[in-house]
Length: 365
Image 1 (cartoon, rainbow, N blue to C red):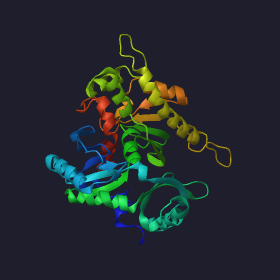
Image 2 (cartoon, one colour):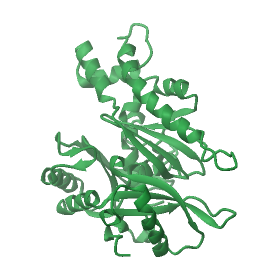
Image 3 (cartoon, rainbow, N blue to C red):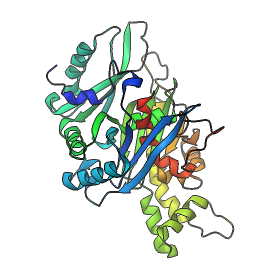
Image 4 (cartoon, rainbow, N blue to C red):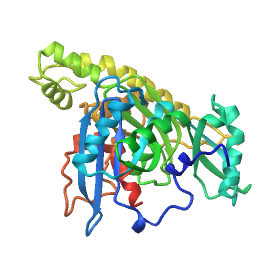
């Protein structure tokens, strides 16, 4: 199909290469502020961390997921690749630029025909001409009584995908796949169980919200609420360095602690906006009904990831606001059991690596 470029091969493959034939690849997560990477190796039970790390990206190089300075970005990637011997990578594209929706196709539809059906649907769902997009899909259900699959479709602007592909090529890194961040996170923290959950990726500058069904995103949204605002205000109010501000947030957070610094008023002011956004997304999806009045994809829980989700008391605060179960994600869920191996990253820090972990798992799951 002419309008589906070769970049679609970077997304989920219809007939993937057998895992034992894949080269060793890193999961590389790009945000506005950093590049994080993760790689695993097989162990007796599960996997072990082979390599991981993070480097800061200069301000303005990547903004809201869009590469603004390709030369500087490629230099950062090249240095990371050289120091860590990264030759192949699975990479996530930013949710801010993605269009995600569900639709149905007849069971047994060949892949090329399915892509044609999706292309026909794009005009009414995506504000871009099909020729300016790259897209792919995942099957969500085995088939209903009417003989249809439910599929989840992800669409990206072609220019954005090509910018990422070009930047990695200039850095000497061969891309094996590109996918949406929420797909990577879901692979790490849900294990693709038959459930529908709301993932909240609470980062420094923004928060990604994603409804995932059986590990596949069916809705994504991004809100300009991040934990950096709290950190900066704590630093300014208490006259402390960033590391100490982070410790205070993680140890005291949203609740007054005896003999503590009482940063609750600062944190509550900013977390209210996050709670409102999470509540809106949760209620919209959890109250949807089909033509028979049955719940459509009711949500089972809210899963928190991202470095800012370590804010003490955030789980209880959101659970109270949304009236739903809230828990921190376990990014090692599909890596190891902790019985014989402890990853070299503590629990708090690991929440920053959810996307990279999910990307690195593509080599094995």
